[in-house]
Length: 286
Ligand code: ADP
Image (cartoon, rainbow, N blue to C red; front, side, top):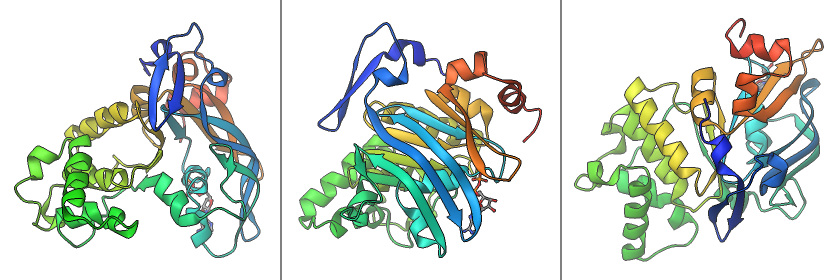
């Protein structure tokens, strides 16, 4: 179960840090909202993939997007860093806001958006270069030049994912030589090195063994003190273990992906709103 829900209370986001303020209520409307979607529709050409998606994602919490294959989870996740822009024929209407600023607004600089909204994929996609270079590539791209500063960023980022002690003596070695779980933590460190506010994780544990999965899940929980984390997962156990909020998606009779239920994870797993949600989270389909 998402054991933290009832203790977290109201969460404030300021100067990149979250501080919890104890409160009697855990309602999402009481929390700082990081991302909002309002009546979002997304089409791949003529195919209507996302229908009328409206929800608020709280800052400094873990939100899990769940649902059967093909219901639009990855599409929804890619909405938040405009990764869908890279797919020809995609059209989007409605509003998606980060810190109340339209992500699809004319003035939005996509490079700076992707710095604020980092992404970690299903398989660790380390670059074919050294461990150190993997970490500093982002900061260098954003203009950091000093060797000392870059080394500091590497140490801080790798420490955040508990990888520093494991790799500090082999920083110049190829990243591809690391074990899969280490590579995935390196990818998370690389995303953190550019100081994002939001971390998108698309099935980021599904290629990992149980021990590495547990490490990443622990890491997600630690990171959610400071970062807004949105995960896509097929694992109901994982959603229940780590997330604060759960967004259950389903396709409707026209095969349009809809947000069927959105609530605190604890609430969804203890008392789902309807039979469809209950059937999905108890593994009766999907
Ligand atoms: P999920 O992550 O829940 O498995 P996706 O977001 O990957 O679902 O896909 C939702 C729907 O959109 C599916 O029917 C899928 O086939 C379709 N889709 C995904 N990516 C593309 C694309 N690049 N072009 C056309 N259709 C796509």
